[in-house]
Image 1 (cartoon, rainbow, N blue to C red):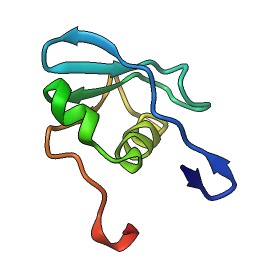
Image 2 (image 1 turned 45 degrees about the horizontal axis):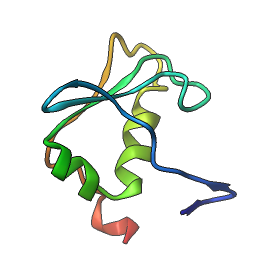
Image 3 (image 1 turned 30 degrees about the horizontal axis):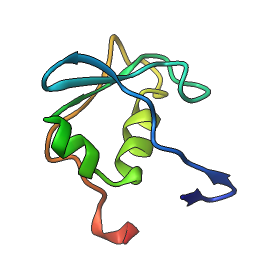
Length: 81
C-alpha cells in the first residue's frame, strides 16, 4: 500500500501472548521503542495498514518510553479514508 512516496508493508509480529502482538523497534527507521497491539489475532489481521503505520509512528515520538500501545479498537480516522 503506498504511503506518500513509500510503500508500507504489514509488519511481522512477535506474539507476546494470545492478545499481545509486538512490532520490533527495528521495523521502521526512527522507532525508539517496540509497538504493542492489544487484540485477538482475528482483530489484528483485520486492521488496516494505516493502523500499523500510525502506531509505529507513535513509537518514534520524542520522550516515549518502553512501548507504543494500540488498543483493540485501533482504526484510522475517517479523514484518511
